[in-house]
Amino acid sequence: MESLKLASLALSPYRRSGMLGNRLNSPLLTIDSAAQFWYCKADLSAASSSIPLPNIRFSCRYSPSVATATWTSNPSTKHWILHSTAQIESIITSNEDQSMWEACKQALSAFNFSDEEKDKILGKAFGLVHSPYWGEERTMEVPKFETVNGILDYLRSLNLSDDDLSKLLKKFPEILGCNLEEELKGNVKILEEQWSINGNSLRKLLLRNPKVLGYNVDCKGDCIAQCTRCWARF
Image 1 (cartoon, rainbow, N blue to C red):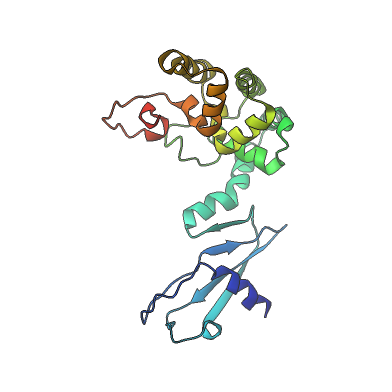
Image 2 (image 1 turned 180 degrees about the horizontal axis):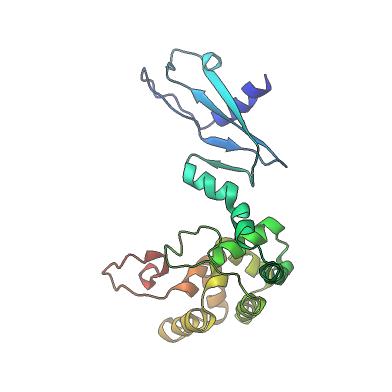
């Protein structure tokens, strides 16, 4: 009965198409737990609008590990979500690297992130966790406290409060991996000089679109396949 209840949750997005022989798979439901998760998939191969929902067969399977809870139907997305923390732990193995990593996490302590959130923010910023933002250009790097703290201090100088920074880091964690002098400061200068965006207007822009601080190319309408970092998006 408990398995059937869980399976019914997974079918909430399902809509009957009214066509015979239609086969649909429900999205994958993972549930955060200390050491396990369940997922259910409905076999709708014989389902039609004339067959009531309770007659549909369900199967549930158990897996011994999970990193977080999420809805996804993309196996590659599930891989990165479920194993991102393990990815970091497998890379940072030396005592020196672990000390550097913990120092950088301490730099984020003002924002009330969980340890897992800090790992993911730093991981995405420095190539240890997959991020489409970087494409193939970001090599894995163990960050330095001075680098992370320097970027946070600069962002605070732009009239961003810690609450603002918390929102910005959740939306664009990769900012910590951008170059402070060439990208962040350079782009703020461009915004001020070319668009007269500064002060509170700059703050509002950064909260709405923080990725502007990471733009480092301008295709001028002739795409060069670096869209996540192109001024054409501005």
